[in-house]
Image 1 (cartoon, rainbow, N blue to C red):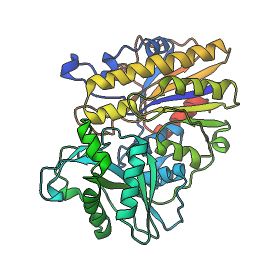
Image 2 (tube, rainbow, N blue to C red; image 1 turned 30 degrees about the vertical axis):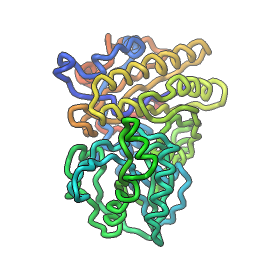
Image 3 (cartoon, one colour; image 1 turned 135 degrees about the horizontal axis):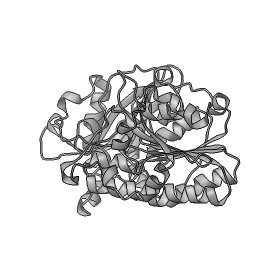
Image 4 (tube, helix red, strand yellow; image 1 turned 180 degrees about the vertical axis):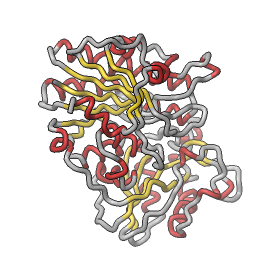
Length: 400
């Protein structure tokens, strides 16, 4: 038996008036998901434990089978594992986003975050901007590490975990009351604007009609995580396919193999087909029993507040990932179980994550189960199934 998770980050949503009362998942053309739904178990699962923030970190830990209340030590430390950042037990890491702030105000505190991703800035451009921050904000005990696109890290030697606000949680809000209370972090984030605003890359981006990456923003503080081996825990050899450092870091911590797909960038126009091909190859040729395919696009479009692009992302996943993977595994004669779900909702109305339960689809190629005509939030809710401890969902997939 082969096992595959298709994790559609942030795909769940709310009914929208502009979509005739449908969610983006309901409105999207998803013939492959619906075909699987006809012979699958549909239900709802709580991926975010009560009293924990609804992040992709806690939610994906749950889906992979790690109880966040036991294993979670912060978001950025997981990303640090992915990019090879050195961390001792007393060190603290911070996510460093490159964000777009409004520029017409005189005071930094009066500015507003327009875009948490600086228009999904390219990794190459972002690396040059991070180098400017590395030089301009040089301070003993603090080290910057380049990541992917707008997602980077700052490591503090023998630091302290402090409460910080995620930029995607305060889009369009005045930033003054959300700045770090820590004086060093606050000074660095304020000075970052002066370093980046007139950088040649941002001058060019403005001319091209793109959002400038004109400030750093720190959040997601945490200490080095300690995950148990996925293979030892579950008895299957696992691989991760993701463009996002967070998921790659979870894989490193869990002893899973990271499969790198060229052109996978975490955006709307990622290499969907390449991820599908890599998943099939891992399962049918490379000796892996379990593959976790993480796709970021729907989440990013939720943050952007675009229902149209969120629908497009869902349709790309259905057409270029789910359909081809199922067809290829059947053609290879493999028995397989496929789990499809979001990690959390990212409603376009609020443009950030919520902790509501999400719908899951569990398909077994060897069992012609009676399912639903479609897979969406509504059919999940109508099923009457609700798994309150999301980290146990992996047991259903693996039949433990």
